[in-house]
Amino acid sequence: MHRKRISLLFALCLTWLVISACASATPAPGNPEVPGQERQGTPGTEGAPGQEMQTPESTVAPAELAEFTLTMPGTLTAGPLTFEVTNAGTMAHNFEVEGNGIEEAFESNLMPGETRTMQLDLAAGTYEVYCPIGDHADRGMRVELTITE
Figure 1 (cartoon, rainbow, N blue to C red):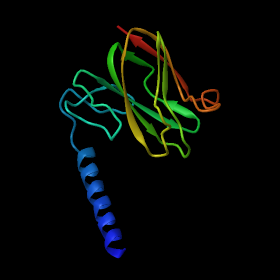
Figure 2: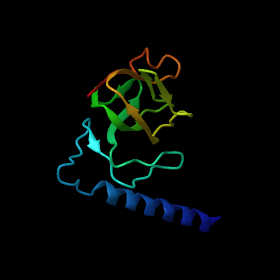
Figure 3: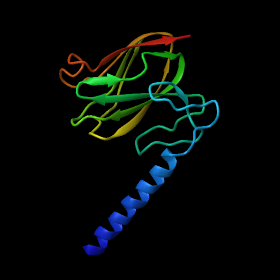
Figure 4: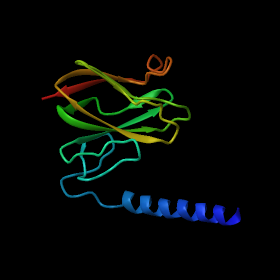
């Protein structure tokens, strides 16, 4: 039992070191990583199990869920988008994009601290992005997203 705990602790520490090293990497020239702004995807980047692979042409749009806010860009360019959604809150949340014939949400809710990606190819127009759980959207977890040409 003691060896299993040490092995688990070692694996967690190693994972933390790898994530820290990746997070501190300098962004490529012409691809600044500024919170709240668009950034281009990295070829071959894969998410956690259950997430789709990100394509090089996909623009990454960060989104943060918390009680009771949804923080993300309000305007993006039409085409392939990868929403990188993080639950920064203390309760379960979800992420739904609706409009222009599209209605997509995660199959299961995001638990606190969890991050997932959602890939969509959005045409120009207006979309509603919100947390579909209970009254979360009515309490402020709603953003009108404008997709431009």
